Length: 158
Ligand SMILES: [Cu+2]
Image 1: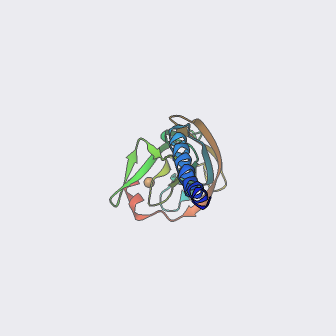
Image 2: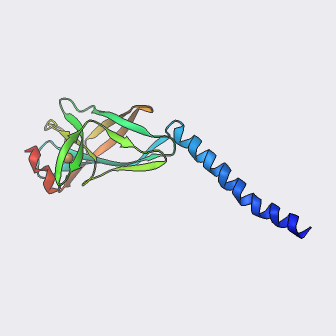
Image 3: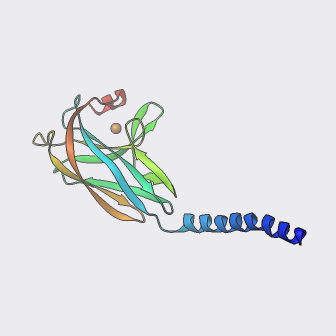
């Protein structure tokens, strides 16, 4: 009787670990579940007509890729930037890992709006639309905040 009881007990954790592994593998292959929080648009205090957009992209599902970004500000250029060493370079896409977080932030990958008309200033409303390979488009309403000091790397925009 004692021996049988011990066998049952030791067999149970193994089954749980095995089941959890199967679930994890299944989730990683599934569709992405994207949510966005903390989105912020800040005007550059150094460069006229330029703003940086930062946010936290959470993904509770499978991997996805940000393949594009657009804005409703007429005539403005919007693009992804990433760090290459200490330099800021254009990027065509941003990978969103499965079951992970991708923070678009100063000093890492972020979104840059350039060439904005003079009518756009602190307090202006705008929309930024993220285009995901699998999740489609997500539109984010933003209010421009004025006057953040840009990191040194942004001098190249001049
Ligand atoms: Cu930049």
